[in-house]
Length: 276
Image (cartoon, rainbow, N blue to C red; front, top):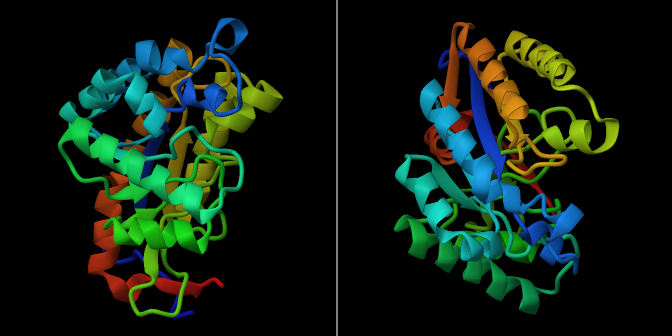
């Protein structure tokens, strides 16, 4: 590892907001028909995504929408609306895969999602987030070959770093770690059924601690109903934490690709980690 990452002298705290589309792909990928009690994912395109777009535009902050290819195939107009509103569209698997895949199965799906998102948005895809946390050196190699700047899947650090996954000089990608435990809506609304008001206080406490250490705040929500944040009160919750962070000096909001580009422009601020 190189010297400890430092954002000091540039801004006090970097903030990236992520919305993981997680539409019917989440059910279909598990062999479940997205109907009846399992229809929550269809809420994303019909209500959750439009509601988040409206809120984010009102707050005038960037955001990255991580979209599974299957959901983009089902709702191309919704994905197009995300891009037309000025928000980044990044990749998030094809069928929100929650299983390990051999390289010969994974590689074409990564290319398929990339091609579809590019076709719909008319823009290059610059980042990827594993839909289940699973990835391999093959995953990173394919993303690198497709020209991706960053991955946002690992949980092992508070700050971005260069992730080296091979022996070749170019076998690396920028890692933007994401916290899927306390800065994610899923555990609160899926498992503990925490009221939104209490989640807001938790997220404020998380931000206060991160802000005090000149760090990186990355928040992830899902626009579904059920355990997601697509409903009015839960979208309001995200708006409240955005407004809270805005009240602090030195907070800079980035899309994931914007922050990746900033990191690459300041390589002296990055640690490097090698994984076999």
